[in-house]
Length: 280
Image (tube, rainbow, N blue to C red; front, side, top):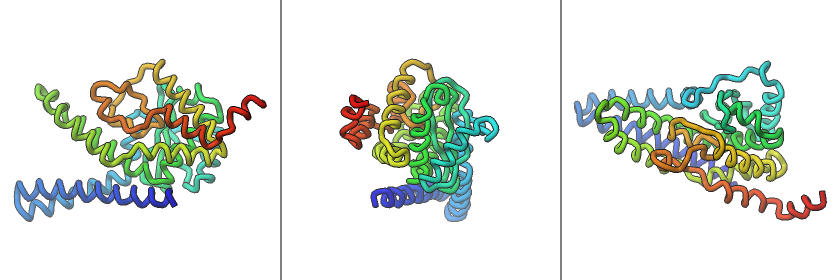
């Protein structure tokens, strides 16, 4: 029941984002040219929203410079993703590769019937098979819950606002002081840290154990302290954990709960795990 309510909430958030964008366009059109320009601007807003819905996954993958990973390049990974997607009850997402050494993964798209998952070369080389499957299951949970619709839309909108600050020339820093908090406010308004706890729990159910996900979170967290990483801070909500240092502009976009708390909650799903470990 909780999952169904989460899906309904995410659908409502998506419609709220659409209506809000159309209202902004309409208000701008009304201020510039009255009813006629209002109609034109609202129509353009609807077209942009439609394009965002259908192509936001490609835009999000482009932001992290991912390329499609063909079946022939990684048949085992594709097979694992297909098996986990069947358990999660969603269509197999497209699989992309991010060419960098930081272990990370992300999901984007419009829901169970149209989504993409990107994994980094660092994740493929550093994670154990069980940890990798847990990370994939976590991202599939975001797809099943339709978190990806809201996450992807919010990230693309926030990243666009940040890029707009670059057109200001000498005034780019002043624009960033205004547009950065605005983009951050949109992200935090649309996204709740609770979505990560629910995705962790769903990943544990899909993998039939909470420990691979807990181990994967600790590995990703440790790697983020050792491997240099740079990118648009607006993409933070897309990843399994926050890969950015929580300082400067990046601190405005932190939407993930602490890794330690996520690991604790996962371990609590199997309270006897210490005794089992000693017995082994």
